[in-house]
Image 1: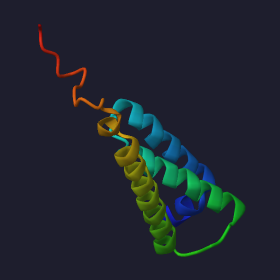
Image 2: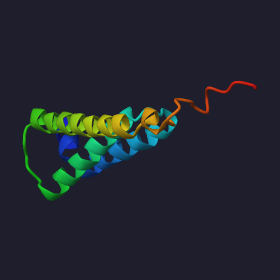
Image 3: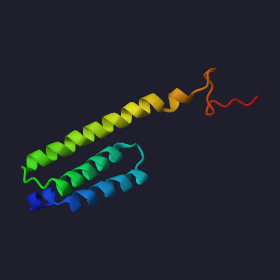
Image 4: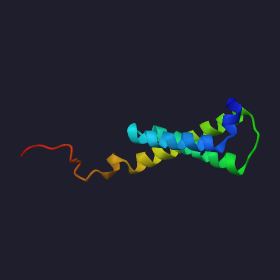
Length: 98
């Protein structure tokens, strides 16, 4: 039964969209990477209907998820909050009543 679900592109698309919508409830960008990976797998399963093994399909999901999360964390590190601090080191959250 799970083998049929693994090859169904619409199931992957539904899981991917559900994970990306779940990101709205649980912010942290963790579900976003897995959701993007599931959507990519949906595209692969839709355009390249390869009857590979279940382990191969799950390995693809893990690879795409790791790539998506790695790309996101690299972008967040480069353009994150610490990169936008003013030159004097002050932050709007470091308010002192003067």
